[in-house]
Image 1 (spheres, rainbow, N blue to C red):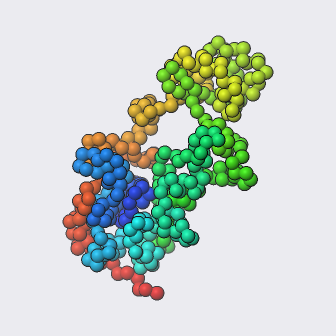
Image 2: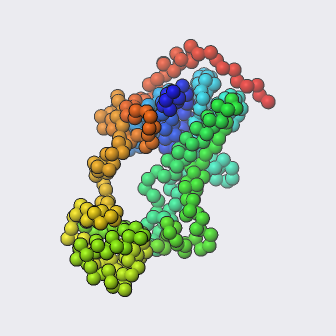
Image 3: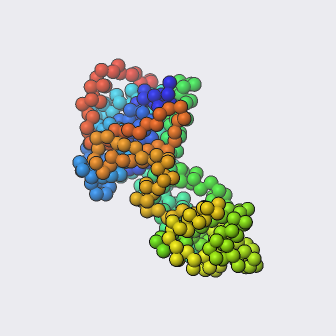
Length: 396
């Protein structure tokens, strides 16, 4: 049996909005699971995040909810609650992320007890206990709380938010890992699991070596890959048409020396000021005080010319890419990151797929589009009517 076919028998119920829960559900849908997205009558709020594509929904919704099915249920309504219970009773996985502004009132831990084979993944923003529990945690709030805002911005400037939705995606990946681990354990024990993931906790777990360094004055620490906010930001080197990276690795002094000779800077090789040569090109702030000779040469060259010359001398140089350049780069094309999404808006037909490959299986590169609001109600209700009703465990 193939890896992908092993997921096709899984039924996942997703009752979540925004990024974290839907992104976790998308990972399972990409592997072939049947993901039923339960939405409020107003729909997932990400349907309105940004300019609408053809059909009315925003691009972010299409990219987070491909391959799912949608049904609208108001879990405060008795009839809809009964339908939701039937859905959950027949599911393998439940992904729940209560919106702090409109909590469902459902006891997710109790749901896991009612259906012993069900894997319940409960996602929250700031944690399930303490005075911040239940408060809405925005991307900015969670990045500030975790300290990620100390890693971007200008030296001696204010902390800044990472532009990417890093806490939502971190929570999604950790939720997915926890779900798969719980499903593996269920194979052995026959029992499901209630697992909880917070966006704050997920982001903290990604600090790893950075957090290990912050034991004293948290704004005055440094080390390899541990540069604190007082360390100058890593930036590119100006060319005539953009910026490039410029690095020769530790132990490549001879390669750097040959490169200097090639660009007319051979005199730097024996200059005692360039004995610590790497700090003048990449590591350390000496690139600002000693980088002038390189900058003068680079200013007369294009990014492609600079990168080609550095790479030919066994260094590493790439252009700082814009989005169009990223997708058009030969190295990116080799990785085949794009997949075709059928049936959705034309502008959302090409999306980024899952990054891993199974060596003995053909790559899956066609996916179904994100659902319209309540698009699959009839089909889902028909399936529930045809299925035997699982009996919930007796309350203890």
